[in-house]
Image (tube, rainbow, N blue to C red):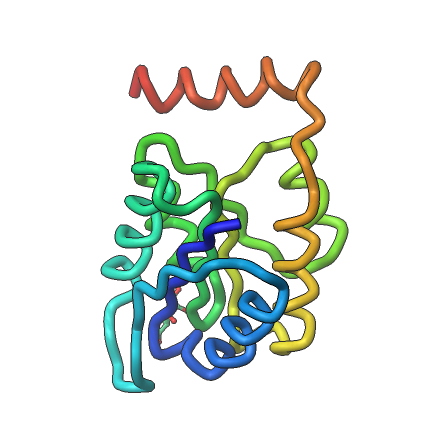
Length: 147
Ligand code: RB5
């Protein structure tokens, strides 16, 4: 899979291990930065990753900041993006199965890097259930279109 990755300084401590995991798992990584632990603004990276997902250069996006919250707020402002802020394994699975999310947001200050990798692994390896959930996701996208 092609994966767009972005983080700010809050997510930077997890970056090396996450990218290593992705490459070792056979994924291709588009690295949108950040490239150091210097203070920076999470929306700058959220938009780059979301654009890669929307233009098809990436299949899924991964965003990491301190809490995951800022990244998820920013990503969900982008038309066509459904981003889940995830801290547990059940949510990582269900957000793919029920919400067909295309971006995951994680917090390196609240979630260990080991769990972050586990959550990403579940996210990338779980398919959308479709069926009744498709109708609900379509309704979410209607909200986006009309507001
Ligand atoms: C940066 O200090 C921090 O605010 C950011 O990483 C993120 O947690 C925002 O939601």
